[in-house]
Image (cartoon, rainbow, N blue to C red; front, side, top):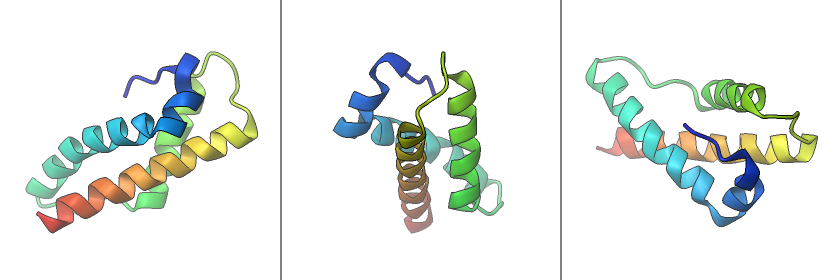
Length: 87
């Protein structure tokens, strides 16, 4: 996922960040599922994605922003997982 760090807070507030990530996750989760593998545990996967996003930031994310990013990632992972499992 390409993160727009300049507009990250606005994208979190508008829901764009979560919906874009969920769409990307759907593709990957469908591939995992079609290969016969289990989908990743949401909390573990979300923390991995959050770590990647934090590392890619041009400067360290404020603690509150980093937590908001994690919560949105977790929601996107759970949403994508539920969608794929319901298919």
